[in-house]
Length: 89
Image (cartoon, rainbow, N blue to C red):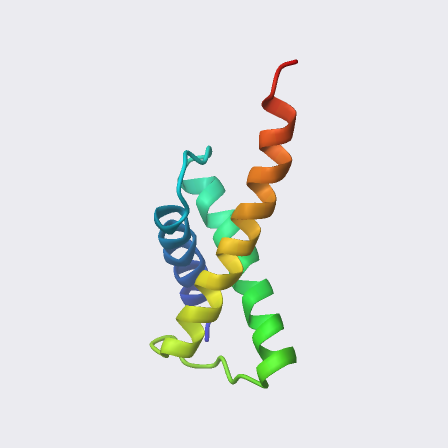
């Protein structure tokens, strides 16, 4: 998979992950791209490590599921970090 297809996958996976998660997440499309790409990398790494997944195809369900799953993990961590700092006592 090429660099631009990886960025596109990350952007779409990040957007889908934002739609799946309940609540309001901050950040615009640049934050979505960054978190989606990080999530796609983490999902791909975990998929390769745990399931010996081959992630070379852009239109593979396995690739998309791992990218979206990784993006969900990253968004949950991001929400916990950012959410903790915005609470007022």
